[in-house]
Length: 475
Image (cartoon, helix red, strand yellow):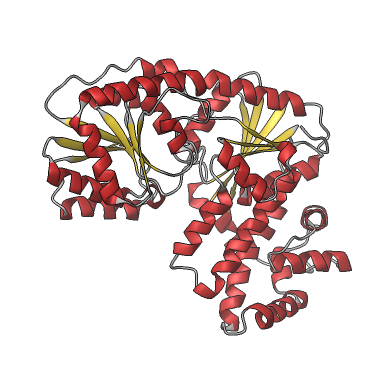
């Protein structure tokens, strides 16, 4: 079976997180043929893969959202639209629930021109009505540019060539989910969705905080991303999440319960379990395996460590990982210098995690949003307890799901709570015996519930279930 994996802003362009998971996933399933359909933000990144693609990846088709900005109107303009097509476009403009099959046909088969659509009388009339109904106090130009910036990448994606496959498996909703639904429609193939985090909720949090979105249009942007996710939620034959509460959220957002299941992350247990404990050397070394990105809230991590350092001098923080956001990376390093912590906060960058863990006593994660972080699973498998924020399923990893009586293997505090993070780190710093006790519990938990072999077998079963599906069956 040829499986098309659809990804957005991750593999194979950046290291860590979903990218690490995806690369190992493909490698561990050599019996399957994969092709990649990947969405990036900037065309300048074309071909800039940071991974050597495994031999069972037979193609990689790249789509870049900023290419939409270079579109020029071509040909005679729009084909004659039916009333149903006009209504579908109106619903799309309103961020409602358009009839996507009509839009797929219009832009894939009938080759409608996105620029012609956005310059049409129909678009102008719908936008004018929208301004009067929903944004009467906003400048027309602001509404125009907001709506246009939403629609242009969507219409552009609808015109992109579709790779042929026997199954379309999206690793996110949003733009990736849209392309996956388009592929399944085009080739009458089954559609699957695996979410590592809840994409719509993450975009909602970002938009609420975003300075680039005018307050008058925040609700519209949130509705826009919910609309994009709804298409794959309503069409996918199989929908997986990493933990039970995420699955419940998917159901709340419209996923049919009978199509949902939990497939927890898994790691190479033996690889991390072989890491020896750090010898006692008079220092407590704390590791943070993170990408330098705002969603990881490295600034709160630095402030919390600053408070810990004021209480005890025998601590070091190692911030390991690549850079997602260069500006944020510069700001974090400047904060370290400003707080006078350059001697005790280290930035080794991307390292061999197995080797580097030999230097660490426990780990720290301060994200404001997570799914089921591999870094926490790896830390626990290496017999290192964790301090995490209470996001995603971090609390369940540290305290156990219902029915798991192994015990507690770390400390969980609310996001952005500097003092609470400092208190939790201090508690683990005080007692090597406590760290070792928690570490043993964490290793047992990963061995029992989060091994890579278990995860891969569940995905193989999912593919077997849809192998003879024509795109309309349910799993």
